[in-house]
Image 1 (cartoon, rainbow, N blue to C red):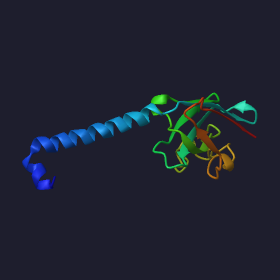
Image 2 (cartoon, helix red, strand yellow):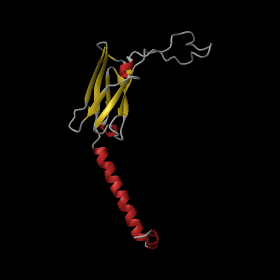
Image 3 (cartoon, helix red, strand yellow):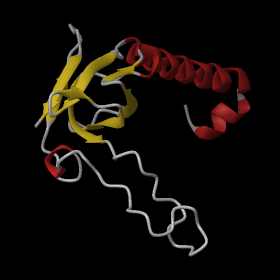
Image 4 (cartoon, rainbow, N blue to C red):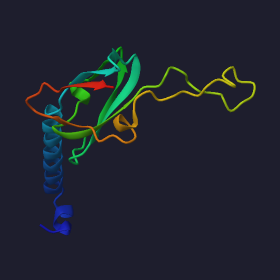
Length: 147
């Protein structure tokens, strides 16, 4: 059916449009049903990381990638925000508790104080080669014991 014929027959055009929309919606639902909850623990030098952030970057071109706060060593990415099966590069950051905000101004309460310092070694963040695989079978629990 040509474009002109579709315009002359609006019911056929709208039927086609609704069908395409329904298929797209079903495909999206299928993908969201495959999302997996991600949980785990991050320890640094044998102790839970008090506060930090963990991020999973897609390696296999999957459309999901997400992160979570680390609180008292634990993190959770809930199923509704979860990751699709595949491999993900992991990055972890955790400062030393100093914000470093306002150090540029001489009248700042933080002026002269040391800047925040990243405690996680570069091989777990900016130079990370850590890869974890999320599976349909789960459980997708990932533990990190950083020396």
